[in-house]
Length: 413
Image (tube, rainbow, N blue to C red; front, side, top):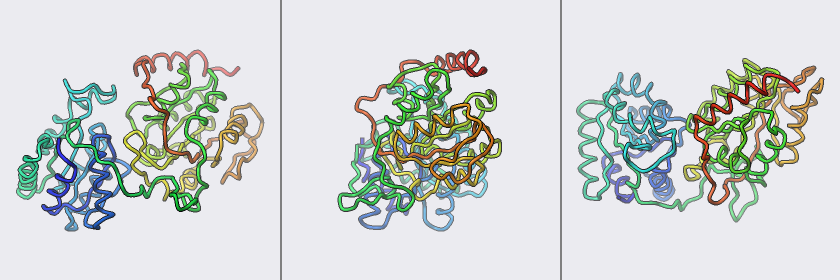
């Protein structure tokens, strides 16, 4: 195990000053150290990318402009990076340095089911992409040699080089500087870092999930995004009508769109997160174009990638409600408390002849019993202690959810 500083400074000596990527718990020490170092000396910079492919593109542009860059991401997101790694850095011969984690390593530490396949093929994918790689150094004395080999390869070929990081390769490093992107307040101020976009959130995720379960009961489908949202929903009450995404970050809303189109007479609720929405924001345009009037898209926005260590997302700088409205959502609502959410959901899930505009939505439909709806809820970061993981397996979740859809959702009570 090495210290984050050892590798970061060794990379800095080789000219690498920009770091970009998508968080993974394995990468937390690096991200935290670089953020702190950037605050202290201004010689380093970290850009939080919304997906792995964008991170590669950011690094490629920076490198081409004379500022060598390092890309970091979880191996589950390697697929998102395949396109720019094959059609940008390879074609244009732009050598970026990659650090990809090795979640789901065969024979390695126990990990979550979504990492199983990618863990077994990560190095093969790098080989197919013609990216030279080696395992990330775990001894201080090996850092310089590893960096020398990586840089020599990139200089000689003009191609990327990848370090594959196993668990516990880097010692923990606690962030010392303020997380500038998080939805939070400092001890000296009561203003939300969301600026004029929203009031300071008063609630965590749990009370809103309880409202969703109250309204959905056991008859409305609920799709929960990957991370703590699905785990908290499961911990509150595991139900066959709840689908818990694992991995597939950013895909929950598109998954819900497929269900909503198949069963257009029954409301479908999808619980999303700000990081997930940002990762695949283009999905909003497809949903807005298709306009499934039975889809209720709820975004629980805490401004962080919470399950990977509370690294900040860029959501505080983005008006997600305006984005949804521009993409064609018929009703756009921002709410602050569980009681308000309950009122909105009651109105949306009843078979009323019209929908009354709620909380001054940017655009509301008229004369429809349902309306494609986007609900943004600013929440506090934080999850219950010892939050359990579902004991029901992903295949079991899929089988029972499909059974629920066949038996309940196709008909209206």
